[in-house]
Image (tube, rainbow, N blue to C red; front, side, top):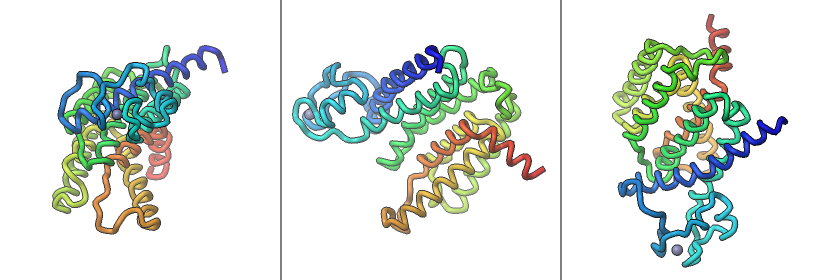
Length: 264
Ligand SMILES: [Zn+2]
């Protein structure tokens, strides 16, 4: 590997770790409605956390997952989110050059941004609707300005394909909410679908939603078989939608190509 590529991957890993700790703050502040700002503090003893204890992943390893003051165990969410963002940075940097290809920033920032609804739905069954709309609009802008449209990608760039994706998603998710009276899907999932339409456009949104349903079904089946979930319990769907979105980004063009081949 050339030194520049290796440097790009290390750069992305470090940036991923830093963004991951920011994502942790976003998740907690959005959950408790305190707004962003102020220093992070230990949820147990309320002491403000020192800068040297805020180094992503490394601080957690150094302190063995405990608060430096009161010694209480810190929720695993912190280190898992930091590690996930770090790995997502490495994946994006292995696919694109951070210093030469804007697609790196699209994939990296989108995948890290998706951690917020992923964790919030998993932990508290709640979704940040304004946040999802913001991510959707940012993704839409990125696509409309043509950065997503390298020759590798099949997705439509124009406003027409974006509107088509939005209408299709609205109908698809809206019908399920109406038919199930909100039992299958909640309004949060509806906004998640709109976000996917904005970010992915047509036809990749189809790949993303389809992948989410398959992943959701697999996880639910395995969970039932292992006795981890009960038959009646409502499973959070946003983690599957987030994973489906990234499947569409990483493998969508190939999958859309196969689908085209299969149906025409
Ligand atoms: Zn503490």
